[in-house]
Length: 115
Image (cartoon, rainbow, N blue to C red; front, side, top):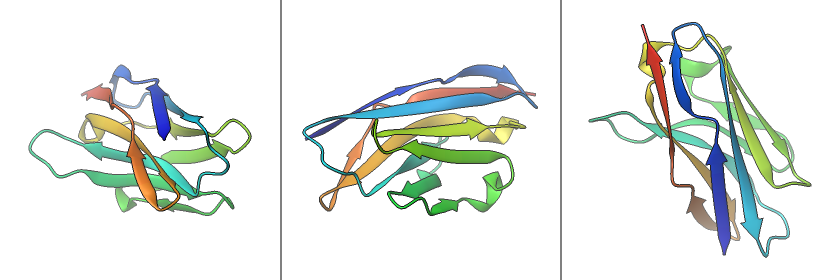
């Protein structure tokens, strides 16, 4: 079992920055992929960014150049640095981890960007 604890959401103005963190705990050897999805009201959950254990990354086109994902494998922690935030980034952000071919999810953290 993997437990994910997220932190770092909040209410900010457009153009501001936020940093999300997600720490995985449990009897873990090595997590494959970690990352973030988000879901806005009335929308489907979408991938924001993910990072594999080797360091390769994927980003949604809408966040490329503004968001950066990083990971500390020793701490099983993933970070999402979000810069130049826009109102359309407003959503609940969910951390995920893929471990032994199974996906685990955090409880979600709200990010609200005001115009």
